[in-house]
Image (cartoon, rainbow, N blue to C red):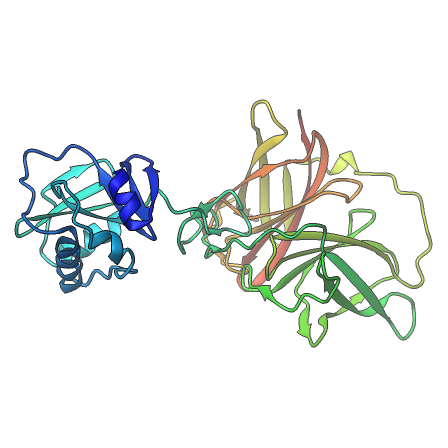
Length: 393
């Protein structure tokens, strides 16, 4: 192995689940005891690799980066070649494609499938060494080495951007209503935490560049809006009455992580009044909104302030609703806020479902009371159903 490293200029590598060897670019020479049941082919590593690439290509399996590591493959390694292996993000998809071409594996071992191409043994194995490069903006713990779809919300995973230091800032200007107080439009500008310049690029999350939640200070007013992109930011035409509000912007900036940015505003004509907090009388397990009867069951998670929120939706007669329509690419949306509006969570159900059951797995910032709004679409109409929940520690 040391001779190979000196000759090729590669580095010693330990590939999880596969073994030790030499890495050069995306190509590895792994050293192990050969499988005695299949005799190694009498050919150079380079010839074997090129034959394997050609064999797969003839069966419509494209090997990306096949030119990498030519220096390593060209070495006269004083060892018997056991087989050529290719790592894939989705081994099952490769197996299905080869099955369609009339080829079946001669052996299965864990996440690996072995095929015979004449005398050459070819392995297709699960990728173990690529770092996570993609994630779901709504569920950042869902990550992948390549482009995939989030198994929770069905959203396409997006590239993980380099981290930004600091907090994105949102500047808000109000366009007053002509009379009676309140505003007729809001204008937003999102600033980069480092350069303080306007953010120029936004990635689409659930079919929009920016989701703007407007929550009244008394936790009674709620709106989920989508401002239009302008030359220097976003603009939302909205008839917002006089009052105190928290604006919560949910967006994915280019070169940044998913953001939930809060900005408090007071619209013209507002007269301050004491805030009494969350009304415990709202802590109901059933609400009737737009002809739908929505029941909530809270399933606490042991040992932490988290819960699975189970919603069951029926019509006015009590019959289960199974006609929910996708709303912004999801079966439903859930906004959770703390009573002081300093914490917010925008969540989506664990699975795509037309009803009657929707489940959201939510990590709360702390024990206590929280206000939430469930949004679903039925018959082209979007409904918001409010609840109050108490989360134990």
